[in-house]
Amino acid sequence: MSITRKNSGAPAPRGAIAQRGTDSYAIVPRLPSGVITADQLEALARAIREYGIPIAKLTSGQRIALVGIKAADVPDVWASLGMGEGRAVKHGVHYVQACPGTAACGYGQQDSLGLAARLEKLFDGLDLPGKVKVGISGCPMCCGESYVRDIGLVGRKNGWTVVFGGNAGGRPRVGDELAGGLGADEALALVGRVLAHYRDNAKKCQRTARFVEARGIASVRAALGLAEPAGAD
Image (cartoon, rainbow, N blue to C red; front, side):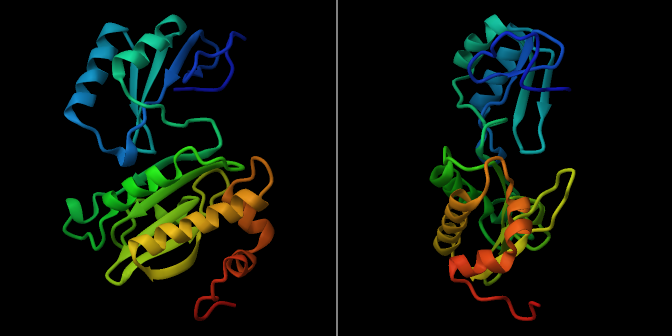
């Protein structure tokens, strides 16, 4: 599957991404934390059959991309799905991926799905310099890939650890821990503060990993009034 923002030159329909070298488009319905209902599954299946959509792809962000839609069909597909749009190319919070946590995993130490739902509501639509991906893990096994996401949260017995500046792309970076042992409200408040700092100080299109490399994590901690962790250089 090859997707870019441009194809034959025609403007992309609203909520669609043009496929390279074709006149078809992809859409990414919003599935907060990768949780999907029976009604949503049935709506997706109906749309795939009715509009002859050739590819339905599970993405790394726990979403389902529908690929190969004719331009004229895009509005009708959205209407038939009755689902919101998941960011795919715009700046801001793209997705929140989360492991099952205490809801469905014997290893879970914190409620990752519950925290993910709250985070989605708080920060969806926030205007940011670049795209931000969030990974939430309910235990230190880190199945939510928290240390290689722009924002990461890791559940431990004593609470949540907040991680900032991770990236799993072509220039990977392990994120830095900002604070640990936090309650859910404290963790969300810290996420809001670090995103505000990033929004107000990063260059346009600068991802959090590059922002931390340019500024230094010590500068970020100082701006947030956070102490250096024990043993830090």
